[in-house]
Image (cartoon, rainbow, N blue to C red; front, top):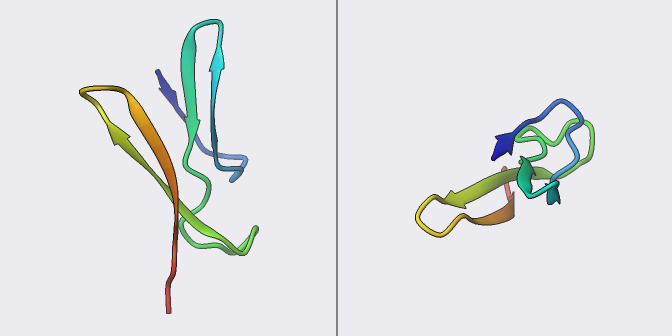
Length: 54
């Protein structure tokens, strides 16, 4: 499993059997969306969630 950022593009993909997770950006400055990744270790379930910040 690889968890990375840099591109601020949220998503999950599989590359040669390895999950690659990008949570996006928590500030929303570039995309207008504040996103985080929620990872359940036990079953390797990943959910990208958009946050609503005031």
